[in-house]
Length: 449
Image (cartoon, rainbow, N blue to C red; front, side, top):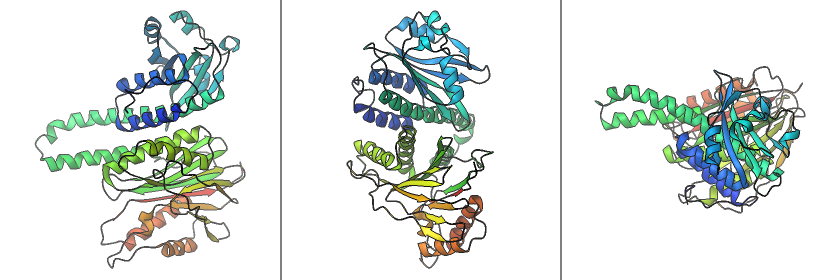
């Protein structure tokens, strides 16, 4: 069932999980916001049983917020709202944009931040409000808002958790759409040149574009948060083909908790890349809802299993580092167990949990484990493209060879560690085509905040 065919969803029901899954799939497959976001707003309003839902985007050049997408039964009010602009530091939306934190307000008239100019302009009467920030890799994008439950009551914390998860998905969709638009403009400028090329060359060009798109949706800037001294992180992903199914991700859940993930989708090429994009979007949505590591994997698995006719699956390791204490909570869905590099030069493999890959069984459960890191300790995460790389004699790189390298490394900094692993694997496979995607990520806890 497509999201266009989905019936109106009652407020406070489990159907929201299905809606989030369908929207995440749509975000991965579609790039036209003007076609997709109005429908997302409509479904959001129906799921919350709210009077209205809107998306405010930030016009950075003018330092203003505006309403390009509105869902309400009052067509006249919606049209008026689309013409409204106000300073991005004004109102509750401005506060949410500035603070980067979702909020629920039961009575906006008692909140001194409430900007009454919008209600005066549109003739509406805002009573209760949900507001969640839209954040991208480079900063604030805008704000997602819903107003006034139709039953006359207030929104709940469950409503806020759903709304925040939806906002995380919408943020990713907006960034992807903007990148696609830029890329489309570049392709349009080159169309006359490629018209004379044969179909094979055109296909190679499209695959290269797909590779650039895939690379763009994973973090590529290091250090990711300049000025932070409590941890370091670095990663590298080398697809075997133009596009692949490996991915890594890292993001702050709040000032004191860093989420890290690494995964490997079954298969290769464009299908694996699309499944990867859906998995990453679902994981971020679950993580932003403040679920535990095990809870995140359970929810992502359930949503992936809803409509997985191709029978694809993904191994996924997900962990949360408490940047104050060094406690690292993690869950593992069939992925290679990471290595812990102690500052004492001891090497430990995180115990395998024995849990199933994601996308296999809908009712699968996942265990959560914890390990304590001391200042200077690090963790190396990797996909099987590292240990299963072949040389000209058809010998694999192996877990043993990787462990030997890690024991002899002299510089535990993440950037150096990742570079040494990649160089060692490439040297082992010199003279052979890369047989699988290869992804390596290293994290070091420094403490001291």
